[in-house]
Length: 219
Image (cartoon, rainbow, N blue to C red):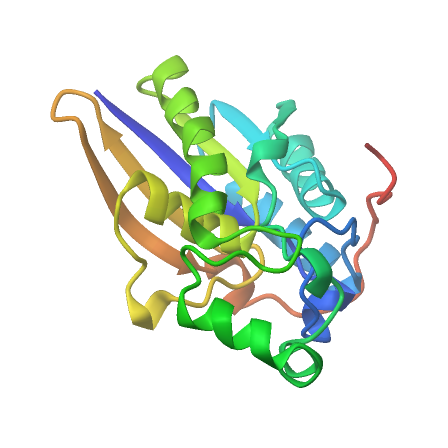
């Protein structure tokens, strides 16, 4: 019996557009993010999704709200699905961190799996937080198709912590509202990364202002 998980990165935020590290900050979708989320929701309308889980951060909640409205489902909020905690670097760009915190940045980049961001998490910390959530979903919903609305770094952490592999280099970038599919085969006790970072709903989407905006303070 196979269980499919479609991992969705949230829509774009202003901080995404400006290259700022968001971490656990409550940054809402920008206009482009709302358009992306609407396009995603329309794309998923024909999918047979059984359940939806989402991070508790506003950019994910807004994205999930569009999808749940289109599919007629409710979502379950799980804070374990949050982005990696970047601690003191939250709200900064990589260039700013390289300049203002060069020594600690070099230490983290030399060993990102074990060295924590100042006041934050390491890659291994992140995977250890999110992997139990995914294993719990699979155990509780065998044979179902689950949608997980989360963050780019968290998608990498799931693949790293649950599948024990890295997303291939040519798919390393996870675009906003992209789809990454992983499958668990219970009989073989095997995981498979089927696809990563797909955005079929955006390839032909005209980036115009959304017709309706989900309130960032909705949840």
